Image (cartoon, rainbow, N blue to C red; front, side, top):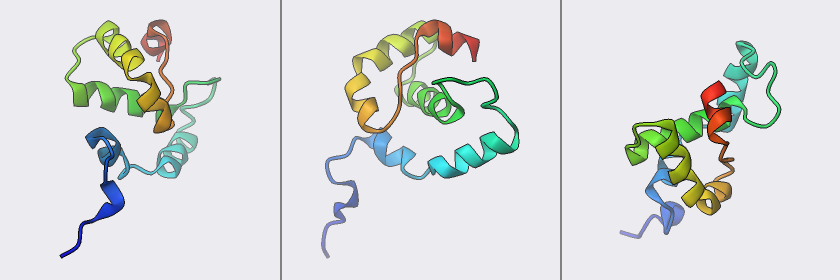
Length: 91
């Protein structure tokens, strides 16, 4: 039996979000018009940041944003932008 190299050296969070297609999320967002007045922080990024917070076990927005800022380089590699706390609170 050979190794499956598809997930080799990927963080567990990156492996988990690979099952969520960005096109599916964007399709649902356009169907329900949830990105109506969005400039940078769209529905997909909001979903990914909230999943990141749930995966890490964060309880509040401050904790979530501080933890995400610490892992910002890893999240950018997964095409996830880290918002400011006020932006996340507005959503």
